[in-house]
Length: 201
Image 1 (tube, helix red, strand yellow):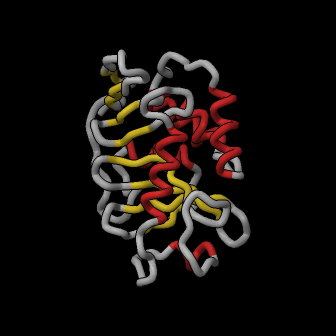
Image 2 (image 1 turned 30 degrees about the vertical axis):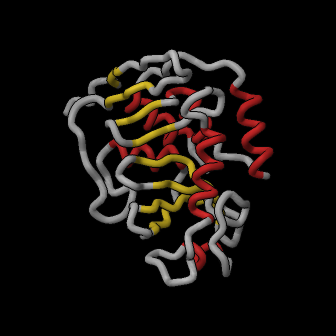
Image 3 (image 1 turned 30 degrees about the horizontal axis):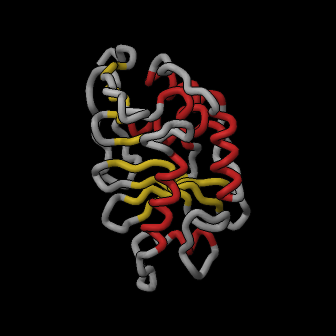
C-alpha cells in the first residue's frame, strides 16, 4: 500500500509535473482491462505526471496515452519477450518461491508485470505474494531478481537518491537536480531536457 509520504517524497525530488496528456483515464482502463488487474495508484500518478520520460539518460517511463513510447504496447512486448525465456533452471532470487508458483509467468495476476526498464538492462516488475499483497521484483539485467516489499513511489525515490534499488551495489548517485529528457509522444516531437529542484548536494 502506498503511503502519502512515499509518493510526496519522490515527487518533491522530481519537481513539478510535465504538461498533462489527454485521455489518460481511458488509456489506463484499457491497459488494466487487458491485464485483468489494476496497476498501483502511485505508479499511475507518477507516470501521468512525468512520462514519457527518461531519467538520468537510462531509466525509461512510458505513458499509456501517447503514440510513441506507449506503455500498453511496451508492457505487451516486454511480457512476450520475457515469456519466451526458458526458466526451467534455478535463478538467483527466484520469484517463484515468493509467489508460490511452479511456473514463472508474465503479465498475469499471479506473475510478474513489467512497470519500467532501463538501458542498463534492468527491469522492475509488479507482483503479488501468496497473501495477495503487492510487491516489486527488480531484475538487474543478469537474470538476478531482488524482491522489494515497498510501494513503487518508494522504489523510485531510492533509485533517484542513489540507493540500492536493483540489488546490492546497484545504486548510482548523481549529484544535483534530477535530470529529465522528455521522450517524443508523436513522430513530430523533438523532446526536451529539464531538471528537477535543487537537492542541495
